[in-house]
Amino acid sequence: MKWLLRLYPPAWRARYGAEMADLLDELPSRPGIAIDLVRGAGHAHLKAATDRLAPSLQTAGGPPMTTQPLQRHPTALAILALVLAAPTILMVAASFLAYQVGLPALAATIEPLMKALDDLPRIIDLWLLGAPFLAFLIAVAPLFGASLGRVDGELRLTLAFRPRLLNLVIALVALGVGGMLVPHIVAEFVLEAP
Image 1 (tube, rainbow, N blue to C red):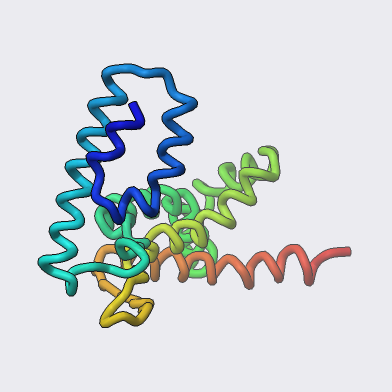
Image 2: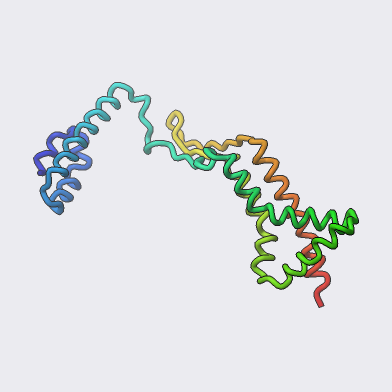
């Protein structure tokens, strides 16, 4: 099988030939491996020819690294953020309307719900408190991107901001609701603690 390595370009053999020969010593001789070697030789020759014809297209250090997979689905992430924050948003809105605006009918409706929350495990309270901040992070994640690559021989980090109205609105609502909860929690648990 090692004789198939002679199909590869000389530069490739000089760089990888010894390692590939060692690897082939450990592998069993199978037709599939021979086919892979022939196919790899073809790709190596094609790459060598491309590099000779268009050296300016080469990227030193490999292809650019991108960290933008979340930007493909900004609407889906905005909806996910809204679903995560919805229980907290509803609780805060109902409490605000009942106790700050002074709607007694709404206060009578949500009072049993608030009492039921006191009987549930504390993890539910923590979820209701943390959900807006998690929703904020999920909503803004697709708005920012970074890529690392070579431009004119220099390594460059490019940061990008792609505003999406739905994501921005949901992020701001989640941050606002979370921001409203912080003073409430501080007042209720820290300042009123015995």
